[in-house]
Length: 148
Image (cartoon, rainbow, N blue to C red; front, side):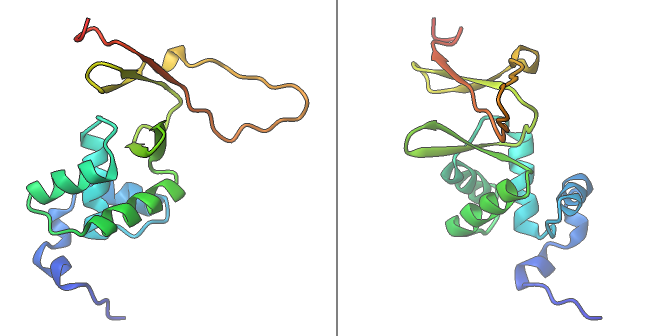
């Protein structure tokens, strides 16, 4: 069986992709195409809770030829396949986090940085009465130590 790849895929062969990210994508049922691997790699290596536009800007600066809409589509795919989580810390802005274990986020009101708070502090929630919890998102807002 022949497999056909887009022109950009042939320029940057599979050997340039990192095996671990490709393998993780495959384990979650996502074909590890070059742009998908690049977006996922960026999220794993940059734990700064970026927006889609932040990811697009960073990847294009690295020399990756990618459309902004492709970044949005890949992020949607990664969220749907439980590889990253979308965070709605601000009303009109989605940020993305590759850390899928339950943890708390802290947003500094002064500098705007978002920090992961130790997972051990995440509260155990036991709802009585037959409720099923699908997700919990906890964000604390205040001033970080750097801005005090």
